[in-house]
Length: 250
Image (cartoon, rainbow, N blue to C red; front, side):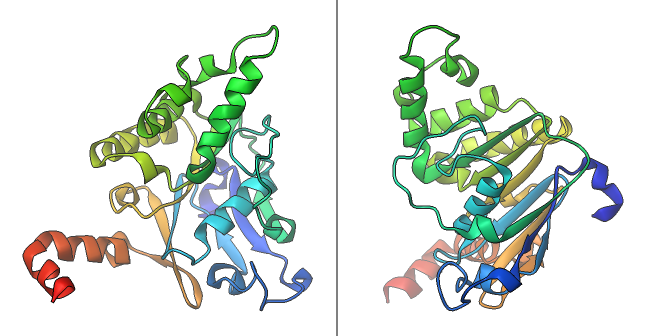
């Protein structure tokens, strides 16, 4: 990765291990944090995958906040808080930044996207100025389905030459929309964008120009696509649904 640092905005993430007060306390007790030293990021797309509760969203949120994004999502210009739920992990991270400066950026957090849409409407209801929603396609994000609003965000708001941190972006997307998301992601990569994505989707993580880190009990491990549990479980089911269902229900 280091040979192509010029394509990075965010090179790596280091945990200030000497500053951690107690590795037996949350969030430092999470496997993804407990064993973290340095996480090197791909210049284009880095996937972080793992079981529910493994800490992937906590790590992604901390990276986003350390970069300067609002904890509930949005750009660096957003500053709202519906409920203080993010951990203090960002205070213990050091981000390795390249000499290139990102001209754009966004933190998409699926679970708080509703709050972001509400904040946009609140800001746009004020006097004067151009409407923020125009940068998102011009249609209220609340007046679209969850999936449509997610896709409108990627198509209209993401402009390229930026760092985009996405936490489970597939949450509201159909399989067909996930395929369309791969196409849009590739367009943005070709426009010198970098992505860090936490996902459960075996469709999204099939994007070829990327690295995948899988969270296990002993920390993060870089794996090939076919080695991920998501791929293996999905393939085993689709190869023989009847047999898998019989096993589950017997």
